[in-house]
Amino acid sequence: METRRVTIEAKPGPLTIELSKTAALVVDMQNDFGSKGGMFERAGIDIAAIRAVIAPTARALAALRGCGVPVIYLKMGYRPDLSDLGPPGSPNRERHLQLSVGSEVAAPNGQRSRILVRDTWNTNVIDELKPEPGDIELYKTRFSGFHATELDAILKRRGVTFLVVTGCTTSICVESTIRDAMFLDYSCVLLSDCTAEPVGSDLPRTNHEASLLVLQALFGSVSDSAALLRALA
Image 1: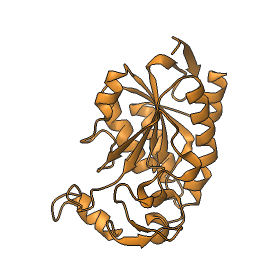
Image 2: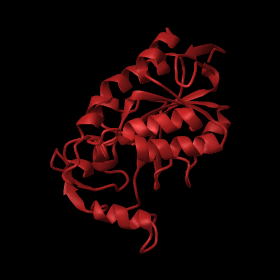
Image 3: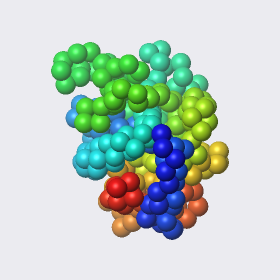
């Protein structure tokens, strides 16, 4: 990849990144969260906001791939025996059991699948953002993409110090991943129109907006896909 620096309009201020040291993260844009028949939709959670970020995310990823930036997909997925869900009584286990993790369901094509279980329709990336050859897919078992995964090692082997972050949901898995990235000294820019949050969407200030505020104040930068495309052009 060429050594090329671009400056992205962002908050709290412009961010200059070196493309040869940049990777794109796509957090949890999988069927369980963003497709009809997935865990969220089955639980009565409105997925409209997640569906709305698909198009700008696809445009951003295409532009980044065109500049040679690697794309890494993080996917929430557990082993079939749920042995990595957490011990009985643990918050991660209890919260996910409330959402029927591990339950057998029928995928839209009629095939058998299981909620949040690895290598099933439920944990596949949504069709509109399907990974391309050379992209990386990485399972995680907690909200942060860095917890007990190879993500940090993969990034370090590639010399990555800048992360362009997209995905869902803003205040949970996206924010958790950016916080851990900051603790590990990565510089993150979150694309605000490429992430969504159903929790608190009906509040005067949404959880999505609150996350953007705290992230740009302390943990990284916040921009959008249009600004990224202008910078890459």
